[in-house]
Image (tube, rainbow, N blue to C red; front, side):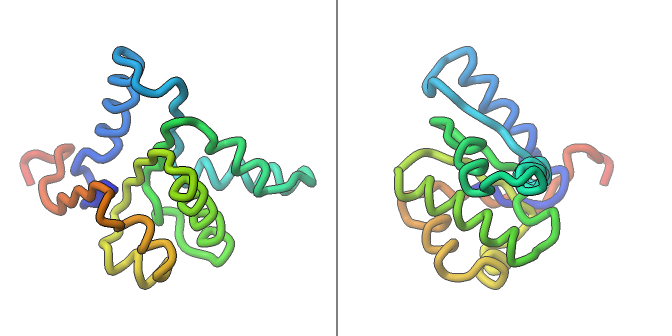
Length: 140
């Protein structure tokens, strides 16, 4: 988990991680999604009559999965269900995932509940929190 304020470098970190994996392969397959794009792809599959869980599994079955901007698309029960499914599957299979968000751990707890938070903030996971220092606006 990489949690922090706007402009702190979360998306840059995701890009650097993918680039590093290309140059020094640790994972055979890696995939990046911003949450909004992932949800749009799942929704498009549903609109075409597809099974959204099968689509979600296909979109997230890489050895390394990175989902950027979790919670930035607003919150609905369907979005919670999608995120829980991703987190639960990755956790159960012990496949690495990186999630970035502007949400605090308490925000995650209130929005997603105990089940998601238990998996995301488990002691074996790395949690990075950086809340100040917008790199895009260094004069602020």
